[in-house]
Amino acid sequence: MTKIHVKTNINGDKVEFLTDPRETLLDCLRNHIGLTGSKEGCGTGDCGACSCIFDGNLVSSCLVLGVEAEGKSIETIEGMAGEKELHPLQKKFIEMAALQCGFCTPGILIAAKALLDRNNDPTESEVRYWLAGNLCRCTGYDKIIKAVMETAKDIRETA
Amino acid sequence: MQYHSPSSFNEAVAISNSSSGLVKYLAGGTDVLVQLKIGTKSPDHLIDIKNIPGVREISLRDDGGYTIGAAVSGAQLTDHKELSKKWPGLVEGMELVGSAQIQSRATLVGNLCNGSPAADSVPGMIAAGASVSILNSSGTKDVLVEDIPSGPGSTSLKNGELITAINLPKRNDYEGDAYLRFIPRTEMDIAVVGCAVNLSLENGFITTAKVVLGAVGPKVMLAHSAADCLVGTKLDDNILSRFSAKCSQIAKPISDKRGSAEFRKDIIGVIAQRAARKAYDRALGKY
Ligand SMILES: Cc1cc2nc3c(=O)[nH]c(=O)nc-3n(C[C@H](O)[C@H](O)[C@H](O)COP(=O)(O)OP(=O)(O)OC[C@H]3O[C@@H](n4cnc5c(N)ncnc54)[C@H](O)[C@@H]3O)c2cc1C
Ligand code: FES
Ligand code: FES
Image 1: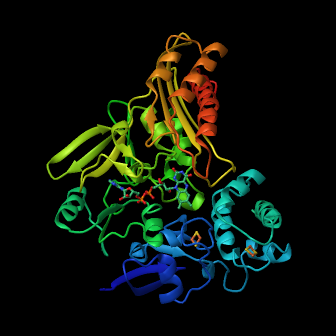
Image 2: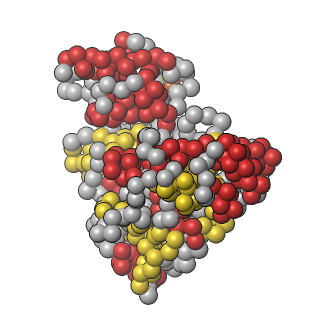
Image 3: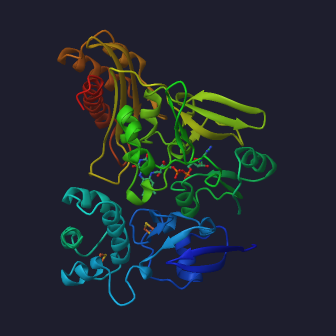
């Protein structure tokens, strides 16, 4: 199988990799680029553990082919924190213990960031619907929803 | 598998016609990649249409109708205020497809071409009287969306035929549509039954009605005789209960893990009645 040479941009850095056209973006991130923050929970779009921002849109990277990344820009969990400080969502998740095993956490943080970037005043139902594609087997969701609501509040107050 | 990313529709069709083995077009990939992963359909050639100029555009035609490019995502439809106001039923059908992650990618055309009898956006497109523009090696043609589904997982599209856009007719005053589905959860599930209704009114009386049932037969289907119960009425309670009974009668569902045939026949009547009421209120401009 001939591999395809893909040039893309990940978290602001130029990245090139070789991929079999059947491989997903998630496979490429984890196995070729060494970014293992995005997780594979299901591989079929149901769990959100592989969530990334692909050309400005929240996607499940298990449902995007690696070859589709050509010329695009991608944001993953590895790019979420600033140079010195964690993202406000990351800080709040730690402060409010919105995670247990942590497997779902990168996907949930990316998805929650995508929501707050477009709406920093969501209702609780809006947060719950937005995160319906992110499954968590540990927390029971309540702490996650509260942490997102609290972060939104902080963002509004500092804005 | 070979991946192709043509820069025009003609090039896409040419690649399809000159390739052997299983050839598939790729829109949002939310069905194609799942099938690839679980190994049910493993194409030899995958032709990505998303890099074709204009394929993600929603445009208003001179005749007042909308043309929706083949790769327009669910999220783009919802974000389009004017389209959502004119065709709330069509948009809410697509909006029910999957999570926020799926909405960024999934398309109306993919939902249609995947051929599921439970596809959530298809009843709304058929009720709207939408057509698709199809390109093949001999040229382009327009076909009604209702003529595309042909059975579970299959369509009337011939090998190599590519849908380039969906065309919605012009919307007039006193018209309204709605789509409702029944699922046992609140999000992220496949319709047990679904129903779209599209109505036009004159002085409060229904002049034309289209009723489309999903997940209660081998394909999404138009329910002409149920629609006929509505025409000439103001949708009072008697009419609604006759209409509901008619929808249950027409439905020919199977029993599966999502619901028994008996339950589906029963619940389609309830859902259809609510969808009709919602479409009627929208036609009156209530919301
Ligand atoms: C987690 C999850 C949840 C889902 N929930 C729902 C749901 O609630 N309701 C629902 O109805 N569906 C649901 N789906 C299924 C899927 O998301 C939809 O069917 C979606 O609309 C498919 O669109 P797509 O653009 O991703 O299609 P693709 O996967 O790109 O393509 C689907 C089919 O259409 C063909 N095709 C694509 N473009 C063209 C074209 N231009 N011309 C001809 N053929 C073409 C492809 O070859 C393929 O056979 C879900 C899927 C996932 C993964
Ligand atoms: S691994 Fe991608 S959604 Fe589950
Ligand atoms: S913290 Fe374990 S899956 Fe969410």
